[in-house]
Length: 464
Ligand SMILES: *Cc1c(COP(=O)(O)O)cnc(C)c1O
Image 1 (tube, rainbow, N blue to C red):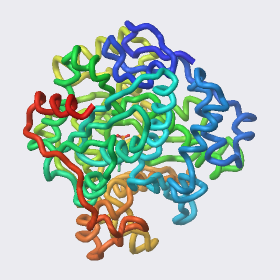
Image 2 (image 1 turned 60 degrees about the vertical axis):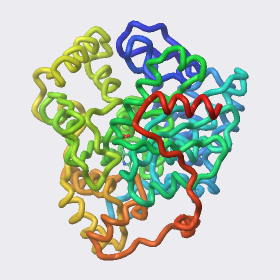
Image 3 (image 1 turned 180 degrees about the vertical axis):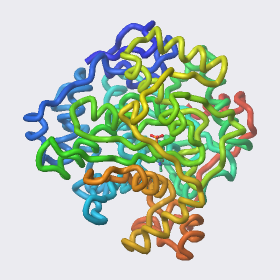
Image 4 (image 1 turned 45 degrees about the vertical axis):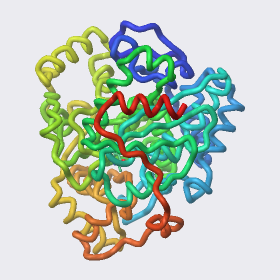
């Protein structure tokens, strides 16, 4: 399998080559040259297989430059009951006939990003060892990405992680979880500034070509192809568990921000799964607006609302270009025109769209008030506490689902991470999950730094 750029002006590459890279040199995103297809017979063969076997069968179609036995070992080390809490890794929780939760948040940081990032950490370690080289990952986080990356990379050989976070802006649980990780290769840099400031520092450090080369800077952000491919697995695994044959349709309500998770569902459907996708956004509804009107209009940084589902508070959706590439028939010239327009006018219009479900994708959004209501309704009806991100998907999913099509709502975080919202909705304290009771008493390992890229670069120099 080779990977091409959505903008069409970069050489095609293999999986291991794009693993450690961000954007393609022409500014586009890497996508597989074509999507692997599974026939009904092949899908039937996968039905009943374990998570690990399913993962191997999906991932070996995308990762053709790592020997299958090695890939099997990497998957076996990544998706364990010890790390993800259950043998099913991503279990389905039945709520009532035709309605279930797909639980993606049982990993070490209690959010769905563990599923792709735990795999990415092991893949990176494997490739760096093979090459005899090392990597310094520089990233910025406002919430789940930072801790998921830290728990995925801790103790990994030849990798250091420098993670910038804005001072005092994450939930208490998120801060404690990330800052108490005491590992020699993980550096928490707390910046006196906003998340945007942190992102600007990352951009500036990467723009210094000499520095980037000398300190072997890398990234683990949401456009990383390995992350997308790892997320395709749980759509196959859950669909095959819910159905007896492939004629049955299943709808997935996906809480969406950067469009990584929903893109993985879109690719799973292109690969042969009979699924419907419902894209669910909070009040930052650029994706919902697009799927309703065909107009993609990104927000200015200042216009991004702070909601109770912070991991979906985005100004633009970084993976969206991959979807548009498919929509325009994989015509890179069209993608280049659209993104040029986007850079100039902050929006593009894809043109006339058909009246109903024009993209094979339905969408909707939820306000913070609706999120609170939904948390209450679900608790009352099923005695289950869901987090605000999952509540966005529950609200929109129930609104948009069709009669007779089973609905799977994707659970992307545990409620304990967002205790304030749960208290507001239900008036109860969610107990800390097992193993996290002591979080409040652990010492923190952080470095506080002024909002200045030069100081961050100096810190990296001193610690490599
Ligand atoms: C990252 C995240 C999302 C959004 O996923 P995307 O792939 O960026 O669309 C939703 N919920 C939680 C809890 C997350 O951490």
